[in-house]
Length: 253
Image (cartoon, rainbow, N blue to C red; front, side, top):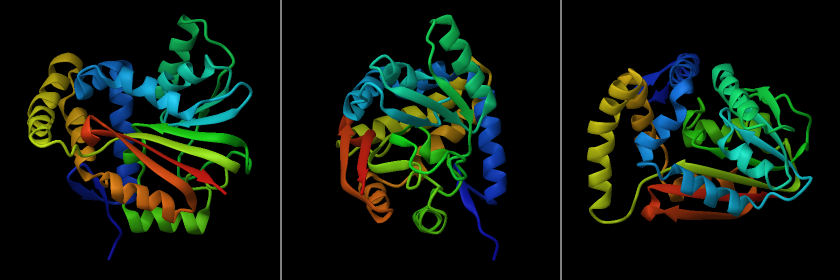
């Protein structure tokens, strides 16, 4: 039986998901901040600030910001003196990030078109690996396939590119545990966000996929288990808004 992976609520072939995700982010690249505002009620800026405070990038550290195309996380970390490589599978997202950096006169960033499953960086290149609102779009997201890829290929995610003692940080939507709030956000996200996408960005279907992909992503406990099984220690989960969003972290030994 052929392997399938989730694309929102659909099951598709892995190569088809990669293709469709690329199309989604090419479509939303110019309106990426608008998309995040729609999905978070504008709170993504506060979450990203908190995320970077948890990463604590230090001056001179080498940090890989995966799926970081438009530069939101990279700009924050670069301001603290870290040496940032922004990687993204989508060249349109990288183009938006480069243009934003130029307009803000932010220099010193490296930009690289990369597939998170097939990184081409040298082994043990980075002190930290960050990924914000990107991991759920990686093709092999389910536990068995994802962990198997880590174990067999090592460079699929962050195991080889991180130095010993390196840090992994992930900011991602999850499932809130606050009574009543989950139902409110589900109603808002499923019914209103796609309509906002249609109204503001003329792209209802891309926004619909992004909401559906949140619902298919493992919950906080399950994802922490995946990180631990991949070989990281001192794993931690910090829920925001009861778990609507979570900061995951771990250390490589």
